[in-house]
Amino acid sequence: EKLVINDLKAVKSTFHDHNLKLESIVFPKNQVNHLKLLKKEGIKVYREKDLLSYNNSNPFLKLFKSQFDYWFGLDPILSLPYYNHGLIAVPGSLLFRISSLGIKKYQSNRVLIKKALKGLELAVNEKKIFHIWFHPFNFAFKEKEHFEALEIILKRAKELRDEKKLEIYTLKDYVGNF
Image 1 (cartoon, rainbow, N blue to C red):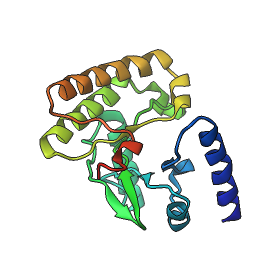
Image 2: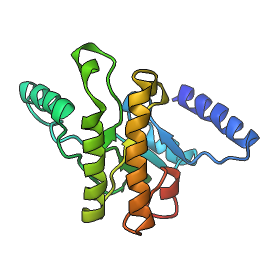
Image 3: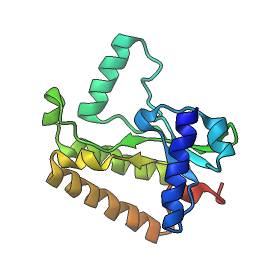
Image 4: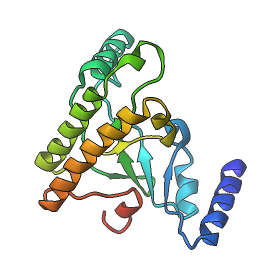
C-alpha cells in the first residue's frame, strides 16, 4: 500500500507541474486493486476489466471461444458504468490490437474492424458503452494495419457522433457525467 501511495504522489506531482488533475486510472495488466485507497487519494474513475462472453466458461470452452472470437469476431459485450467502492468503473469492451505472438500474428485487421464497427452500432442501438482501448506499443507491430483499421473505426464513430447518435467519452469525461 505504501508503494501505491508513493506512486500516486509522484504522478500527482507531475500532473500538478502541468496543471492537470489526476482523476482517472487504468490498472497495469488490468489488476484492479486498492480501490478504497484510490478513492481516498482523489481518483474518481477507472477502467474495469473487459467483459468477455467466455470469461466464466470451463477452461476448454474458454480457449475455444477466445480463439473463435480472435479469428472471427464475436459481438463485443457492451456495458454501463457502475460504482465500485465509490469509484466509477468503466468496463472495457475491446482490446484493439493485432497480436504479434504465435499463429495469431497472421490475423488480419478485418476482424478488428468488423468487431469495432459492430460495437459502435450496438452502442447506438442499445444506448450502452462500447469501450475500445489499446496500448500505444500494440501499434509497433503491423503499424500500418493498426492505423488503417483505427482510421476506419474513428471515421464511423465521428459520423455517428455528428448524427447525434453517439457520444464519445474519455475515462475522465465520466466524472460529472455519471
